Image 1 (tube, helix red, strand yellow):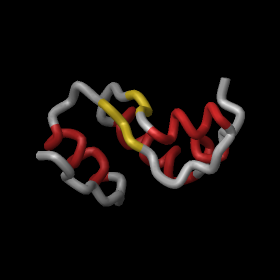
Image 2 (image 1 turned 30 degrees about the vertical axis):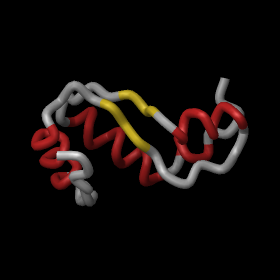
Image 3 (image 1 turned 90 degrees about the vertical axis):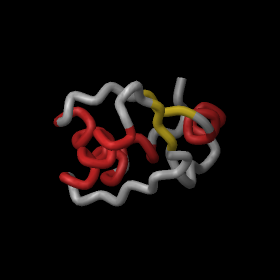
Image 4 (image 1 turned 30 degrees about the horizontal axis):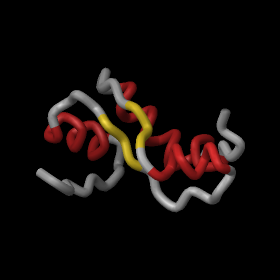
Length: 73
């Protein structure tokens, strides 16, 4: 159970969720945000995993006015 939901309920996170949902892109939160949220630690950044192609994700977040950082492409 997440003991710290602040990062999940934060406006930037909710904007990302809305952008991906609007584009029909399935995703999961992964990595340190999940770990830290479960441990009650502050979450500094979030990572997601998705089966969508990077170009589709970048289009979706760009359309929402967010900045995509194409790490690992």
